Amino acid sequence: MLPYWFSAMTMKSVGSAALKMVEEVRRQFNIIPGLMEGHAKPDYATCVKISTDASIKEMIPPGALVMLTPLIVGTFFGVETLAGVRAGALVSGVQIAISASNTGGAWDNAKKYIEAGASEHARSLGPKGSDPHKAALWQLSHSCLPLTVACSLRSFKEGVN
Image (cartoon, rainbow, N blue to C red; front, side):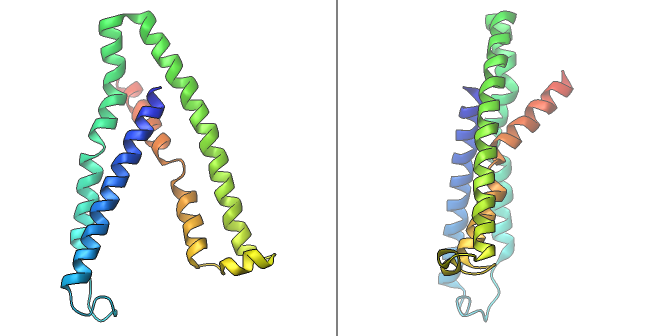
């Protein structure tokens, strides 16, 4: 259950950070004359600050979940319960990894389908650099992100103990 909870927390964090970024971009389009036409430069620093602040602040609860759960469970419920929690986290984490791997493969196939342009439908989606191609690339690169972060934090914690 822990990997699912962790993944949900990270996805919620990414969603709230993305919303803040969209609001900032809209604000800049409204107040900076010529930005929409490409005649003015946007305020990149504010967007970078939003992203950096969110990445630090929003990852505290998921990181605490990964780091503190074994300590709390082991202290209050004993070694046997901790072994069960760890086994459950491992098994459900493997299931998420398999699912994410299949998802990544599907997005990779979508990207290749668009790039090949072998069918009329693929050609209608556009060439490399089109919006559907960019969407497939973005999703391909982000499909396994929450699990990767969880495994990194868990590995770090194991190295500390």
